[in-house]
Amino acid sequence: MPLDTDVQRQPMDAGAEAAGAFDAVIVGAGLAGLYMLHRLRQLGLSARAYEAGNGVGGTWHWNRYPGARCDVESMDYSYSFSDELQQEWTWTERYASQPEILRYINHVADRFDLRRDVQLSTRVTAAAFDEATNRWAVQTDRGDRVSAQFCIMATGCLSTAQVPPFKGLDTFAGRWYHTGHWPHEGVDFTGQRVGVIGTGSSAIQSIPLIARQAASLVVFQRTPNFSIPARNAPMDPEYERRLKANYAEYRRQARHSRVGFVVPTNEYSAMAAPPDVRHREYEDRWNRGGLGFTGAFSDLLIARESNDTAAEFFRAKIRAAVRDPAVAETLVPKGYPLGTKRMCVDTDYYDTFNRDNVTLVDVNATPIDAITPRGVRTRDAEHDLDSIVFATGFDAMTGALLGIDIRGRAGATLREKWAEGPRTYLGLAIAGFPNLFTVTGPGSPSVISNMIVSIEQHVDWIADCLAHLRAQGLGAIEATAAAEEAWVTHVNEVGHATLYPIANSWYMGANIPGKPRIFMPYVGGVGTYRQRCDDVAARGYEGFTLTSGR
Ligand SMILES: Cc1cc2nc3c(=O)[nH]c(=O)nc-3n(C[C@H](O)[C@H](O)[C@H](O)COP(=O)(O)OP(=O)(O)OC[C@H]3O[C@@H](n4cnc5c(N)ncnc54)[C@H](O)[C@@H]3O)c2cc1C
Image (cartoon, rainbow, N blue to C red; front, side):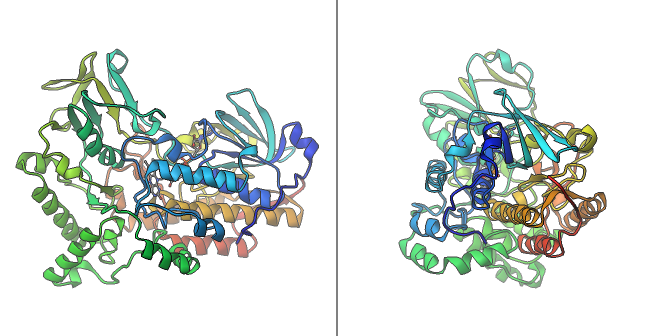
């Protein structure tokens, strides 16, 4: 594991750095890019991080919509690499709000003196591998032309906001926003007629707050989601004290868990429990709130019959919460198993539909024809609006990577290579693209996990790999085509042994028209996956070709 103290950076070649030659370029300065920078510094490598946003923080810089907060608990959703950091930082709530997480990330950037190697407001547009020198040539939209031996993509899995191509959007006379690009100054909806398009996680967090502020709110829903109450509350100081006293062991368990945080899980099937016991288990987890629900039984994400019992429990909760039976029925998710689209965690979501100023429109029954100057026109009504909020999600996992013109050996592009869907070795490396790493790339647990745990695992693995190359005097590392093929097959097999691929989810690329339907994350478990990566390294980077020379 990395040292806790920030070792002063000793560039390999200060002159080369001044001329735009680095040991590594990092793309993105969210949780992944910042930690990567810290680790490279500790190794004495020179690095430059480029960030498209005008501040660090990634997700937490961009997603400033009302109600934005983490849905993994704060004590888990935080860096573990520095014991001093985790001991000194105090979270105020069970689930931290976006402003608090952004304050935390900025604190980390200052505490570890990371800013001096981060260039903000700069988008990397192209990266090309030069086989003669084993270096990447990186270009940005600000005209930078730099080279680096290693190129590390910390571009984020949910950083490419997706606005569906609605006819007429450019004619809308009001204002429109995407939750993932929220104005820094905030938006005051007081007195306005607002429409929210989408009912995924961001919508479910923001709708209750927008409904309280706006004069009226119309929610346009395509697919209802399963949402569980957060039961957010001020941080319990006694809980915090106990956990901090035992943080190292707590983090260890999280790293070796299934999803990157500790969830008490029953190791038997839902069908093995008598109905009253099963119901009590669901009720307890519902009352505790949060994502731990799916740990109720061992097979909720594997066996449809078991999943149905949990899904029915949720449906009954929704019908009980929403007064108008027709509205309740529209909000009830059907046709896909619980947990196979990202489960949402809410505060007052269903109750919001009992408000007089909130209308739900089922766009399956009445599709949106167009955005008009006045608002949104569905097949059978025109909804006059002052503002439209697109809570329509992201081009997940591959969008940011394919947004860059990445060229590997012989000028082959990543876009061509991934035309039928992403292919990686371990979600970390790509055959044909030497010395390029993807943090939480497709084929790794990534978005299925507590992401900060997965980020730290990848960053540590990459840093250890670079240290190994340096120690051995090696110049390049590249995944073999055979190892990549075997990994892709394994990821598919593991995915298809679960219920996940049944849903039309963004895990499958189903939210982006024309995107190949591939189940992208690795669902074999965070702990199992970590072991696999460690084994690969321990066996001398099995599945990689290592070559000498710089
Ligand atoms: C609203 C929301 C809530 C979430 N809540 C949770 C949660 O509770 N728990 C959890 O585990 N995960 C959550 N996530 C997932 C979250 O994305 C990760 O937890 C984590 O923040 C990802 O960090 P990252 O550094 O990998 O990526 P990001 O935070 O996305 O950072 C990537 C950065 O790269 C930059 N970038 C991309 N392409 C380029 C380019 N070409 N040039 C320059 N810069 C570029 C982007 O601008 C971005 O700032 C949430 C995501 C969203 C959107």
